[in-house]
Length: 322
Image (cartoon, rainbow, N blue to C red):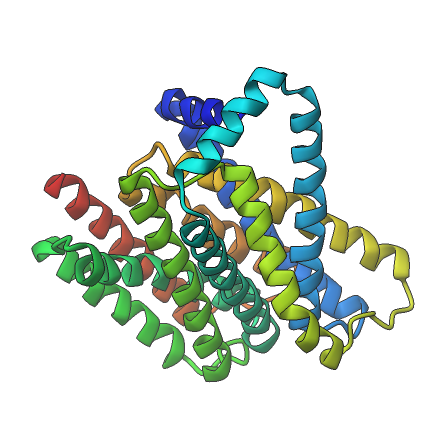
């Protein structure tokens, strides 16, 4: 499939199918934290090394998909690809790929570190709950989009939710360092989302699979020195289990989920995307409590409700503004 046909395909994908893409991506992202927790239980692999293997594995899978797609393309499509690639200056393309790669690296690495520090449920709820709020603030400052009264109320509700999580009943799963790492992860997520939104508005997004693959390449290169210092190869009594978990993390919540996310986000409104992607913290919290033995505290439940309500209000405000 050529780049130009990829653009056309994105533009003609029905909204319903795009929403389905986002639903699958959100559910898949929600399993990443659970898989990371199982890796930590089964080995001494750290969050930076895990993030490296996630980027490297996702890159390998996407390169394989791109190779198959390129092999099936006709000569005419290849010529069209070259013409489409020439539209965007090389310097701008490099900056776009580097920015996306750095943002994804911060998002993933800080998220895994937050899961290790404060648990799956809290780390994921804070990351994905704060992300849309930061996106709304960044859109106002960088893109000129006004929050409105509903947006201001949503930001206040989200901050209240974060306060309940951090200053709740003192449960062992809520740790300020982990919350800070989750907020850093949310900042990386917001930066990537705002960049994607801006590129979509200006028609400079490029091919989804190629951009995602290059972003993973940037992340893998940037993470390698830190992963080596942390310990690139895990020590474990069950290597088969760790390998399968790493393969799962690279395939489902990385290569598949990010490709579906970018494809769906190109069609569905950003406010709707923010709401749909809250399937991740909800599913991750359920997995954390049901499968990993994490405690369902009053503060966790109340904070999650406040965050979900705040983002829903923000989405409603953006819909009315549109």
